[in-house]
Image 1: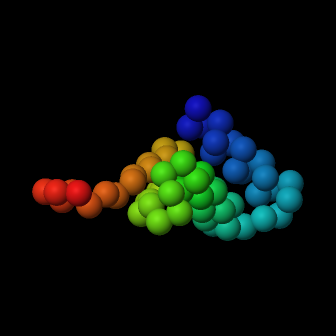
Image 2 (image 1 turned 180 degrees about the horizontal axis):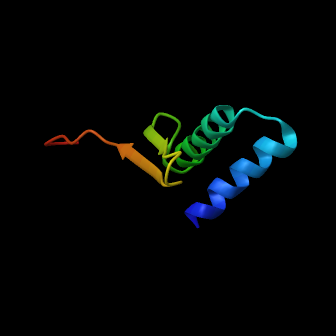
Length: 68
């Protein structure tokens, strides 16, 4: 699947003349927005895309407390 993402990004870059970095940034922002929609608007989300391998990493940071 990772190769499919890289291939799709390459194809969009070629056909639409869009900057690859902009596509990656937009993809990361979209995934972060989807996570915030599920976990709340104040969720601390970090999305990273590896341009070399096509791997996506999504982290949702939470604060651990003794009592709620």
